[in-house]
Image (tube, rainbow, N blue to C red):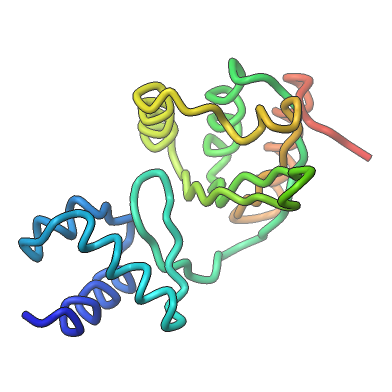
Length: 170
C-alpha cells in the first residue's frame, strides 16, 4: 500500500470510528511504525482533515448531539475524577478542557470522555505520564465544553459541581 492510500484509509477509519483510535493501533493495522502514522495524520491535517488528538487516540469530531455548553470550574488536581464523574454520570460528554494562558491565549485539550471507564483510563494515562493537567497553569481555573442530552442533564451537572464547591458562576 502506498502512503497516499494509507492516509486515505486512515481518514476513512477515523470517520467511521465510534471511539478514538490510537496511533499504535493504526500502526499495527498498516504494519508501519507509530511515527509513520503520526506523520500521516499531520499530512491529513495539513490537507484540511479536521483530526483531533485526544488522550485515547485520534478522532474526527462529529457534530455533538443535544446541548453543547461550557462550564467554568476551579479545583486542584485531587478533584479531577470527582468532577469528570459528576459530568458523565448525568449522561453528558466532556468534549474538552480549556485554559487561558498568559502567552499563548486559549489552550484547548480535546478529551471526549463519556463514561466512568473513560474517566479512569484518562486518569491512568495522567499518572503514567506524570503530566500535569492544563488547569495547573491557571491555579485550577478551567472550562469544559460538554455535550448533554437535554437541559435536565445540564442542570444536574451544574447542581453536582455547585454542591462540590467547584463550579464558577457569574
